[in-house]
Amino acid sequence: QIQLVESGGGLVQTGGSLRLSCAASGSIFSVNMMGWFRQSPGKQRELVAMVWTGMSPEYADSVKGRFTISMINHNNTVTLQMNNLKPEDTAVYFCNANLRQESGPWQPVWGQGTQVTVSA
Image (cartoon, rainbow, N blue to C red; front, side, top):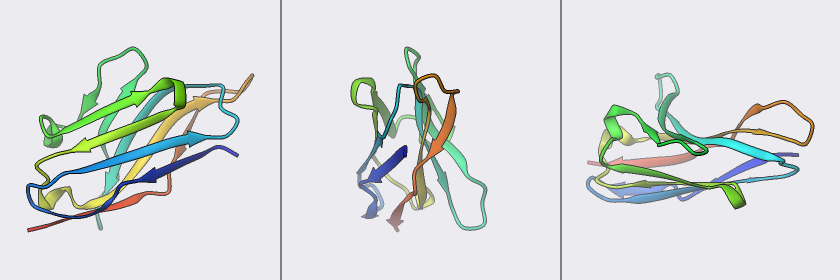
């Protein structure tokens, strides 16, 4: 059973910082992408940041310069450092990974989500 387990969400004031972490576990042969998406009530899930192995990270325009994504391949983890948080960053943040098991196809896997709330 492959799982993505997120941690680090919470409540913070405007201008504050949070660090999200996500670890993939199970019978994983390889991971070639990890990223973070978020979803606010009444809105579609949107990309926050993602990184493919060997590539430069990609960021949503709304978080560029404030958020930093880092992937550690050897232990299949990804972190999202969020600085200068704004109320509009309030959302449930989901970890996503593109991975495969031995002899299996590449497949996307999602975490259960972690709430980030930024108070004004």
